[in-house]
Image (cartoon, rainbow, N blue to C red; front, side, top):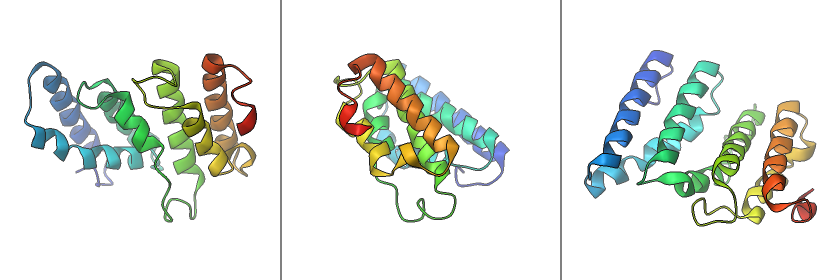
Length: 167
């Protein structure tokens, strides 16, 4: 259902997912149910790159429910956000996957911090992502802006000296 191009179908699928994750925080779900949701998170992260703004918003709501879930949390979502982009994501409109991942990382750093057990994100891993893909000097302004926002969020926590190797 998340693969559907129709916004309403994606929206309703995410509504069901949010309910399942909310219920899972109060009731113990079987391990196989929770492991079956791993591909859903992968697909939601991909939907953050969608050309339809409403679909991106719905996908972000789904990702947020994973972040706040006691079974997944920010550490799991950070791992997905830091995964290398595949060849298809780097072709054509390569700026959308970069902006989506950079903004997701920014939100996680701003809300949960960095260099802690909760997020599992280190300064090196988070700032290595925009450096690896040349985001600070990217031809697209949205990518440069998202990189700057991420760097600002990280800098507010770790200070400017920790960022110097990445800028």
